[in-house]
Length: 121
Length: 112
Image 1 (tube, rainbow over the protein chains, first blue to last red):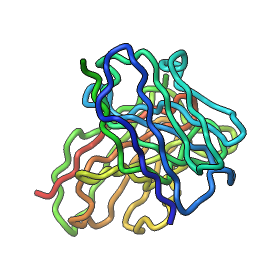
Image 2 (cartoon, each protein chain N blue to C red):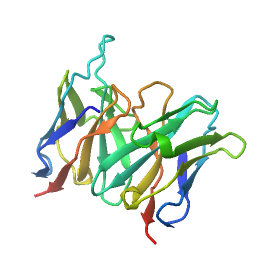
Image 3 (cartoon, helix red, strand yellow):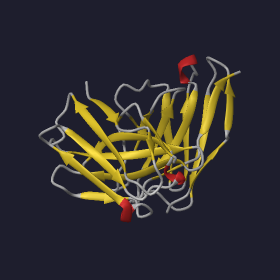
Image 4 (cartoon, chains in turn purple, yellow):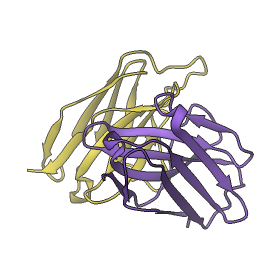
C-alpha cells in the first residue's frame, strides 16, 4: 500500500530554515497526484501549507507563500518542504499528504505519520 | 479565506446509537458542476487524520457505510448510523472550493 514517511530535525532555531522530507513507498510521485504538506498546532488547528506536482507546478497557502519551497524528486521518489525564517508560530506537527490532480486541493487520501517540529533557541 | 464552523465541540456517544456532527461555511461550497466541495476527516487518538467523505457525500475507499455525508451550500452533516468504539476521535470538516483549503475547529467524539 502507499506509505508516506516524514523525516527531519525535531528542533529548529528561530530565523533559520525548517526542512522536511517525505519518503514515498508503494507509489510513484511522478504518477499523476499532487504531494503536499499540512501542519497542526494547538493554536491554529489544521492548516494546509502547500502542494507540488512532479512537473514543478506548486500551489502555496498565501499566508506562507513568501517563505516556502516545495519540490518533488522523482529519482528518489520523495518530496520536500523548506520553510524559511521560522518563528515560534511555526511550531507544529507537520504531515505530508497526497491528493488528486485537481485544484483547489481536496480529498487528502494518504497522510504520513507526522513530524513534530519545535522552533526554539 | 473561507471560515468553517463545526458543532458541537464535544459529543459523548453511546455505542450502537446514531451520532451527528454539523459543519457550516461562511460561503456556499456548491459549484456549478453540482458538487459540494466539502470533505470530512477523522483523527483517532495518536493518529494522523484520515479522509472519510469527499465532495460532500462520497465515502472514501475502505470507509464503513455507517458513515454518511449530506448537505449542500453552506450547511453540512456527518452522520454515524451506529457508533462503534473505534469511531472515537476528532472529526474535521474541510472546504475544498477555494485555495487555501480550510478546516473546521473539530468535534471531539468520545464514548459516554
